[in-house]
Length: 118
Image (cartoon, rainbow, N blue to C red):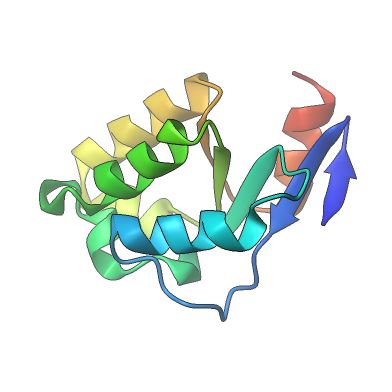
């Protein structure tokens, strides 16, 4: 756990269980239940490959689970390859980063900068 600009961050390890379906998101939320978490930071390595192929609907199902529980999520890591392969993913990342519930950021430093300068 770390705190940036009064936002408590639960930073997940890159080598933890994969998030491949919405029940995996539920499991992660359960692990964090009762803790003062304002945002979950999940490395791209934790997501199953299908998360990055929007036609599979995996990303939507996982993100919806976090939204239902009013948990803000950061996908942490380099998205360049995924964006280059799919205009839909590029649009999803761009639109998500305009909102407040789901962000895609390359590094923790970038996240810290964003939280410190809203």
